[in-house]
Image 1: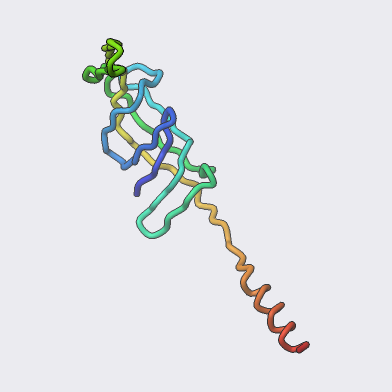
Image 2 (image 1 turned 90 degrees about the horizontal axis):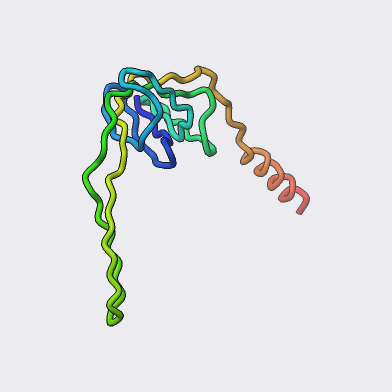
Length: 128
């Protein structure tokens, strides 16, 4: 079972037991976070796709660590003008481990509008 979730505007694949580095989240080490912005849920046989989010689905994760990534260099230059700027920063991250994916068991039934259209075509053919 896995889910695609939205954390701080970025999408991550959540599998129970996997560890991921996400943009910095609020919470101490060992605390639990719950993410309810689930875009897709796959339980092995069925796939549910949200429009844009799924309701009744949540992913629980534990905070393992906070830290800073390696330095990213930003370099700007304009040719023949002598303009050069070098800048860099280290992005904060939170390392989390996904614990549990919970989903409600209610399923929606789909109505097929194709049957209604086909009966309208049949009646149009009978009139001719």
